[in-house]
Image (cartoon, rainbow, N blue to C red):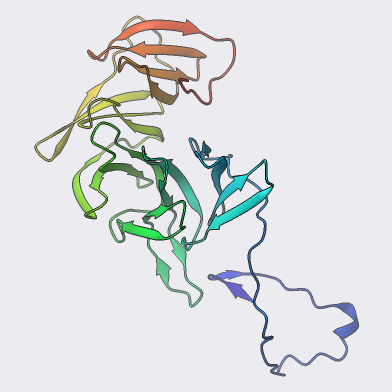
Length: 278
């Protein structure tokens, strides 16, 4: 059989092999399946995709399902609005609204499905908005809500060759700006906590500071100066005073001032894969 355009081998029970007729048609059973429990977590190629909600639920994704898992009560709820694999997730400052982005896919009748972002309510599990259908290429790899303007904007990076960075007014479903980010891998994108017009992206051999000016995104590169430039800048977050903090593949935590220059350095003896400020 084919499931969303993909061939799936179904094995027949041995005791039916000699008597089963492939041409025979049977009525569908009256009962329907209901999703009860989802195992697994997609961590091999995704970052910043595990959050704790005020409800006590941990939210993450696997395949095309977002799981909201209450560890204490051993209960799961599921958001199933996506049509193919999810690659990124972010939580709004209100801690209720969630955005998730998926890859391009194929429908059950073989039609191509475009990659897109779905913004949804984590309480009701209702879809609020769908963004970027027909605009994004291949998949979405990074998502982030703005903080300083009430979370009105959403930045998105797709998986095209140029990794297009775009900023959206998600409630109006309106794209405010877009720019070619990098032809190298992008690992993170985040809004500055006190200025929604500043976005920081990082990835293979780069750290970029973007300014939203009159509908355009203007790039400034982080200056490593005397510090050896790492092969990968893996993650970025912000301190309380607004300094950007990055972790890289050389085992360094670097603190960046508003002048896009290094203010501080902490050496670690292991590879940094995730960084967060408590």
